[in-house]
Length: 104
Image 1 (cartoon, rainbow, N blue to C red):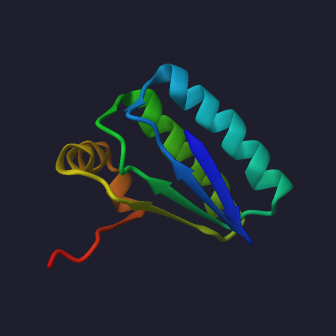
Image 2: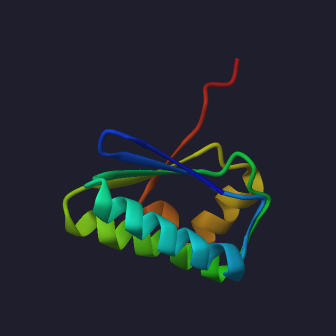
């Protein structure tokens, strides 16, 4: 996974599989960047993601709680149909917006 900080916005480019191993690393790295860079906005980029388990959902929800406490926002982008279904079934779409690119 890759992280990009622009001003007070952190973009997390998620890996192909967001499982227990990756979720733990996402938590650790994101939390350090959020604190160090005074992040108020987090974007989860699901472009490469094909699989996400409950620990991945927990990593997303945990960053949401952290950012929400300081009045920030969390978004998701580039989620395929499978990932959107997982996010919807888990309730994540009730707390964060999933943005799609315009289809032309």
